[in-house]
Image: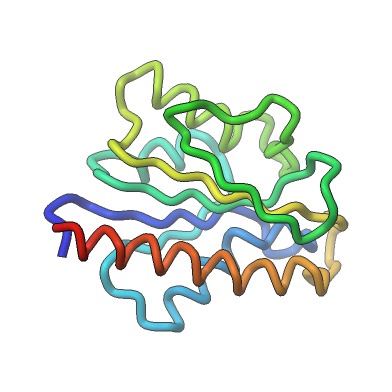
Length: 157
């Protein structure tokens, strides 16, 4: 097992359709028995994300986004390289969310050594709507990718 803290942070609102994507990935990992990472669910408020990143060596942030790509498209970013400006992570009611938390963590020198952002392209963020079929398929795929990356880290150490 890695010596440093590994955290998976699923971001989103369970009552707003595809916005639940990040939290559903966290739930899939937890249900699969992933025990090599601390798995958290957050609604997306930046200070909560910053607190969750504290003292982590590796972090995986998973959230829904909207960039105009087809629903269910999966984007993977290394947060140290920055997040693309055309990808909107601020779909929740919080105006200061994941992208701002990553930039603030970088400015404060608090970004984990490895910080990977998975963004799942959503199509419906309406209140009380279910997660779309395209995003449901992407949730399964992202959970598998995150699990594979965690286990690859373990093999390197």
